[in-house]
Length: 115
Length: 111
Image 1 (tube, rainbow over the protein chains, first blue to last red):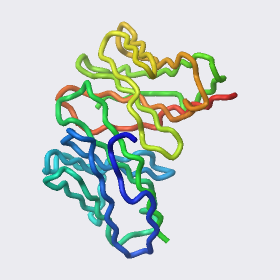
Image 2 (cartoon, each protein chain N blue to C red):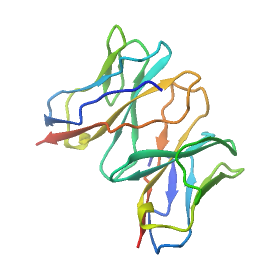
Image 3 (cartoon, chains in turn yellow, blue):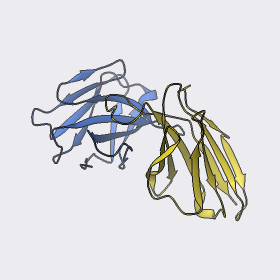
């Protein structure tokens, strides 16, 4: 157990639907990062939150959104799902900005299958 | 962020040492060298990091060249559980906080 909890582990849904992925960061970590990993794209950064505020954005589609709540857990919302959104979605957490000597902790991911 | 170059794949035998190279010729003086690995069907896992000096921890050793343009992750005795994709990532002081993953090196460990 890495300390980062992601739910659900697996999700199968139809095209056009909306899903929510949840992430609880490691205790004490204030930053949360979301990554998408598909077979042909590798690990792609989507978005980062720090202490409830959006801090950095990657190649996140407009159909996707995220937020970080006061208890620091984060949710990634994916809407109008397409077949190409099928991927592993990972959440990672870290202490916060400037702490280069600390590693990031990743969760075990949510496998999303869009049919 | 400065770029890193790693071999696509490497192979090793169980219980033998493995040296995974990483080139980072455009590294700046304040860039930290981080290594992560991703086991099959799991999230990436932090392995080790360093700035200038060689580093050891329970998982691996990191040897950094004197000019810092390259580094080597050393697994002293590879086990089957070390089969993974290994990523070498540079992190800059004051730079982007996100980890940028390249393709990494896929390590195969033969029994």
